[in-house]
Amino acid sequence: MASGVLQIVGLVVGGIGLAGTFAVTGMPQWRVTAFIENNIIVFETIWEGLWMHCIRQANIRMQCKVYDSLLALSPDLQASRGLMCSASALSFLAFMIAVMGMKCTQCTGNNKRIKGHILLAAGILFILSGIVVFIPVCWVANTIIRDFYNPVVNVAQKRELGEALYIGWARHSCGGISRSEIPLNSQHTSDLKEPDDAKGLNFAAGLDLDQQTPPDLLRE
Image 1 (cartoon, rainbow, N blue to C red):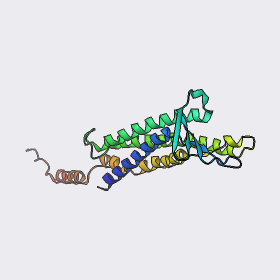
Image 2 (image 1 turned 180 degrees about the vertical axis):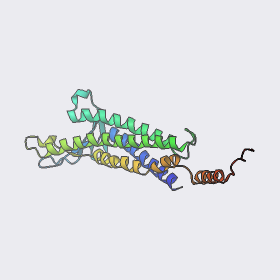
Image 3 (image 1 turned 45 degrees about the horizontal axis):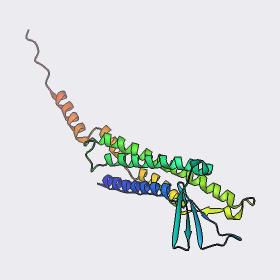
Image 4 (image 1 turned 135 degrees about the vertical axis):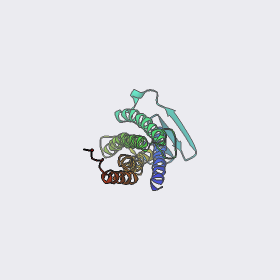
């Protein structure tokens, strides 16, 4: 019962991580306008994402435009686009595999050993997807911080960390949590060990064999 509850909790956390991966991939708030020094035009906010950049004016109107070319992006955003697409595919695959390995599903029958291997594969994919999300988020964050403190960069071109980066870091933690909440060792080892009842039957059978009387002696 407890292992089933942990599986459900792990699946829910994995679903949250899946939704977070899709959200980070599509959100334009990777880089946001930094209001510093002479750049105090607070009624206009610029967002830069993997697929588009948006301009929001006075919390009333927002206009977004998709990038004309992938080559127009900076190297970190180019790599982040590919990595986030890979992370989205891995997260979706891990979630579907985890559903197949749940106790409450009958996709693979009732073989606990097979379900244990399926959940193990899903957990590894969850962790791998979290790592793939973590790399581009930290890469873009490092570029933003480096340019922010670089005196050569124009003030109007400096950016701050957007909401998508914080969601990406939270998504990274969901990968480890979803893997740790799925109990695998108990299911896997329970099939490998011999049940106590079977051991008792084998022991009783051994006693019966020992107590059998030897065959009659041959007549002279």
